[in-house]
Structures are given as C-alpha cells and as structure tokens.
Length: 168
Image (tube, rainbow, N blue to C red):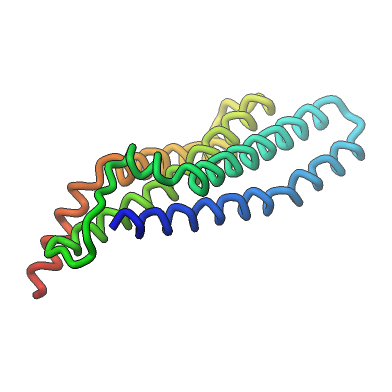
C-alpha cells in the first residue's frame, strides 16, 4: 500500500518541477516589461510581479524535490500504512491515499498562490478588493482544504467508504 503512495507522490513531484518550469516564460516576460518601463511606480509593480513569480517557481521546485527524493519521509509523516494488497480493508486505504494525494496537490497549489498574491498586494499597495485579493482568497481556500485532506482525511474516507459499502 505504501508503494502506491510512493509512486503517486513521486509523480506529483515530477509534475511540480515541470510546473515550475512553465512559470519561466512569465518571469522572462516580466523582465522584458521591466526593461521597457521607465516610470518608478510601474517598475516597482513589475518587480513585485517578478518576485512573486520567482518565489512561486522556487517553491514548486522545492516541493517537487521533496516529493521526489524524500517520499518515504513524507509517507511516514502522513502515517501512510504498509498494508499488503490482499487485505480486506484495501478500499478505505486506497481512498485515504488518494485523498491525501489530492490534499498535497491542493495544498501545494494554494501556498504559492497565497504568497504570490500577498506579495503582489504588498508591492502594489493594494489594500482594497481586486484581482490579487481574489487570488489570495482562492489560495487560502486551497490551503485550508488541502490541509484538511492531507492531514485529516479520516472523515472523508468514512463518508466515501460508507457509500461504497452500501453499494455492494
């Protein structure tokens, strides 16, 4: 059972590293726009944009490397059991691992999004509700849901397992 989690987490790690590389064109475009900007306010805003993208890229690379190279440590922290595949309780364990992986995915989407929007709001001096604060709220929701799924999936597993046992 643990092997299934290890494979899935490593695949997520590869996905995050690939995703980090997909941010690179936006960073390059930001530097190009910065070079063509001569006004101080626009340059400051562009720096905030570039810094937030760099941070998101580095965080995705870090999370990807952790999931690829420290998968066993992550599995131990999340209490992923090593259950033989012939076990009678296999369905709830598969569901639990899937929910934990979804939680990790959602959490690692939400953390960079939240931090990126905070940096953008701070650098641009935006205190009122705008596009950056919308991304902030979305990021906070992803962090909350991702944390719940990754670190406390038992209630969701019970609900899903209960509905599955009623079908059989």
